[in-house]
Length: 406
Image (cartoon, rainbow, N blue to C red; front, side, top):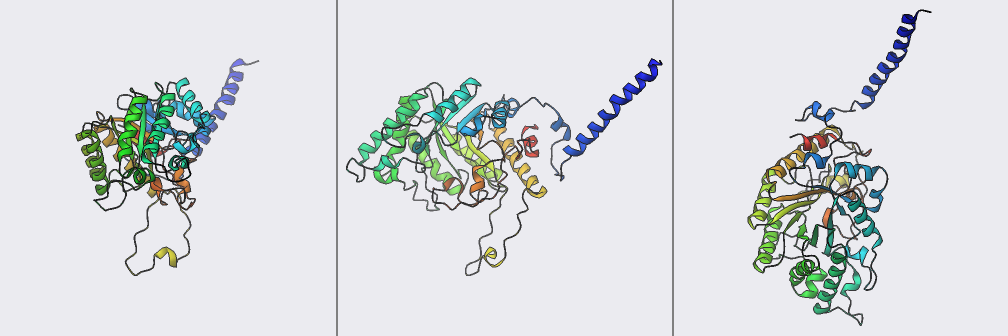
């Protein structure tokens, strides 16, 4: 027998399938559309074992909002690989966790905390006081009428002591008060006229909540959290609230800018101005709910005219087109370029949901049905937002590489 002939045949038998596999893999992995971007293809191939948290280890924690479904299967593996901070998306909000005066639903919150602790992941608490997903019983008096201010604040204190106290030493930061600033362009109306504001006849509940939270967990960092923090009118209202809290020696450590953004909003100048105003007060900043929808609002029709959408049949949804992807890449790159420039003030960046497979914006017209301001009665229109760094198959998008290529 000619062993050299056998060896050659054997080599060919191994080599040819290997070549075919490489070619097939290349064809399958070639993107369906080409996106022009500023990062190099070599970056995409590099550092396959690094996650977002590793790229930003010298800057700030990179977090993600999670639900119970995130703790199992592919999402959990992605979370452990990419992130070093988590925020419970809904399970620590007042309504879900404290639905009636003597009932607390600890199960989901406990499991999220246990998951984080077991994987050495930091935890942000969200949130202790909000006008949405609130507990209706809080605002009813013993006889069924309106509750008094005194009783409402006592209930708020009891709630904060129970929740923040339970996770004392495990949760490193809390969104104490969420979205208490008015949305309108009326510069004289600083505060949202919520149940909290109306019953307390003013904003006293805000300072009270921070004092209760500090007493319940003196080591936790305490944040005021809001959306549209970069828009000039609201930015100035938030600044006035923060300045008032500092002047009253309220224990506040920083501001959470939610960052539910669009492809052209905010501008770099608006983002820098918002950061400069907050940091001028000596406060830290976290971007707490980051996503960038590809959905673009329709132009406002001229007075007396009919909106174009009302006179035309609905267009076919083109989805995540190369043009929209390129704009999303540019917006993410802009944001993280600025984040890194302000690293001494920024103490965390958190994405709101894990991947494009599910985003809370999908049920809000892709982010055009009220967004973070939306209440329970906001109409639900299903449209994919594609707002995150991981696609529907939990794979890294091109936008991912624009964030880590620095």
